[in-house]
Length: 412
Image (cartoon, rainbow, N blue to C red):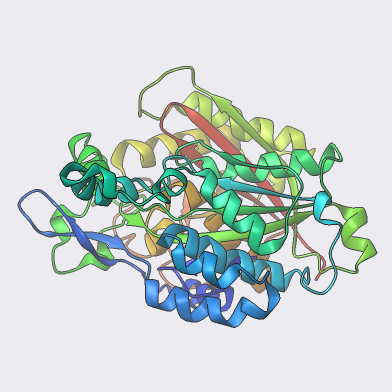
């Protein structure tokens, strides 16, 4: 695993922040609410990315330093997260043939800020637009840069599933490995680099929160609390290295966690409204694919975006699926700490699940002061010990995209 961005400079710092319940949320530079107030969000630090990347340069291909320098901040975050995961997996020491390694980047329209910032120059003097823009505006630029840095020559693609993109990418990587297409797959959740246009769109649709928390930004993201008023943007990239059992065994790789099952399905509508039936059906299918019953799950990392409709709908779908077992299932939403990482959310939250499994704890559910439900067993506001064997991680996206992945604790 690897991670880089507002939620932590690496996996170790992310674990500390999870244990301490430390929010990454503050203010975003250059983005505002209507009226000019600074936008509340969890912004990545470009200078920190540069410092972190320098540590990994000896492990990467010769052009990597130049590629990093000319790339935008989303690709820079992906590169740092990828380099940490690559190093932790020991792939810099021994790896399969480059043709047996794949890469999937989670996200679509990842960096609209690139086009937004270039438009002013283009409007004045179109001929002076930098030629590199022809590559940099495309999401596949992430694939090109990362594959060159890590020498990856197997299958590669970007996947778009809105806020479910991260889970969609993990599921697709697992399928590639099951089908024998690759032995190893790098899954990168790309940090969203939004422009004022997208932010205003979210505000206009009523999805963005924080207006009531000027002066206390860390309290703005409140999943499952009666004070929730909308999601808060988070900028963090994360990377998972998925590997088939035979390949991992042959190089004596550490087994951190296992993708035991998962599912994705559509509601069949084009709106942003969540659907309880669709969410419940996906959780049930994820359980079936893992050969498990609802009683096997004792922890859910919820999608939990801090939007009133989204939170209530997800709790209803969890109630449908777990019913009489609801009392044994602990729930938290990592977004209260990280903000909503959009395309990267599923990968960031998968890392959070695995860290909690391995560390034997539940991270605090900060800002949960007046729960919208008294039936569900939310994590407390302080870290607590927990023995998690099977965990469910939910991610949902605009357009009726529902996903759920079940992780089993690894042997290491």
